[in-house]
Image 1 (cartoon, rainbow, N blue to C red):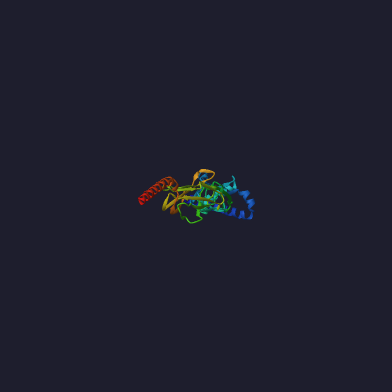
Image 2 (image 1 turned 90 degrees about the vertical axis):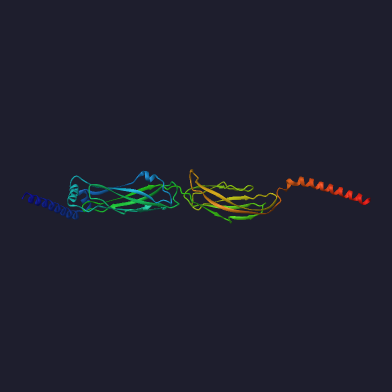
Length: 331
């Protein structure tokens, strides 16, 4: 008998709570929203948080998909009277999960951002939190160590008598230095010259990266007798598409005699950030072929003295021979 009475009491309490919510709901329709807000003072609230350590790490353009983990902290805030009673009533009878919508509404022009979950369902409770993430990629023209941003609009709809909430959050990040240099050979990369000529190759360098870049150039080792010089460095302006031209000059051996030689020359090019030499990119290479073919008279001057001596000796021998031959004829 006592158990039956307790069960009836619980049913009466639950029925009373439902009736209370129905009356409050009707009352909220009649009363304007602004006045309802003042009377009940019950509203959603949330904050969007991320790791400052992660946002301070530079994001590499083009080669990296950066993931920023986000934490949504949800609360229901009320006054001490009616608003608290409304929430307690919802908690007693059960209420659907609050839905928080996340949307990227603006970002740096060279950035693409995608939310992992555009909609987050949280538990209906006084306070809770949920996890999500945002994926970021940036283009190669993102300014190195400049300021990037992503603006996220977050909102939750009304939960019956509990007012919804919306806010904008700006997530900052920093692009890393990404040296991208394109090398174009304005002429062919191979030449055939005589031993007394010089082969000159222009190399056009174009900045496709995101900062002012200094490109160092150097030539690999050469066979004995060959010489090659290249422009030490060029500086490319920050603007994408800025160009400068370097020159490779190759001189083959030109010793006396006939030449038929061919070599391959490699020019190593290393991009570095002009304002910070510690930021060094991956080196890239250009190959050239030079063929030296033909006769060279260079170096003959060192033999002139010996040629003269030999000539004098031959002349003396010839004179002696003529004199001896003349005497023989007279006899």
